[in-house]
Image 1: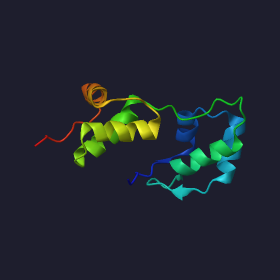
Image 2 (image 1 turned 120 degrees about the vertical axis):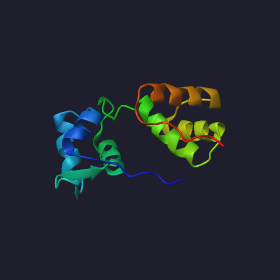
Image 3 (image 1 turned 180 degrees about the horizontal axis):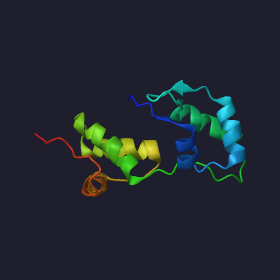
Length: 125
């Protein structure tokens, strides 16, 4: 399965991952940056994840908070590619460590859709 590579500015990453300044300084010194659409440096999510793991101690509480919208984005993508709800639930569970079944995964996407997040699924045939 291919994953979309997401990029964050330093400020976005610090906020999303709840990084204290001491960890942020180490993480961003070790990362390569890319030029974002506005010319600002951006960092790849996978590289941020790896760098955070490298500098964490057991007492650190750092990490991007996973939201229902994250589950919904992946579910929408997979569903629109033709996956069944069971396959969608399995993929989300594997990626995020959740325990959704097909019915609860569909309800999750419906809740996200109700929030007007733009995750509407294509019409089913």
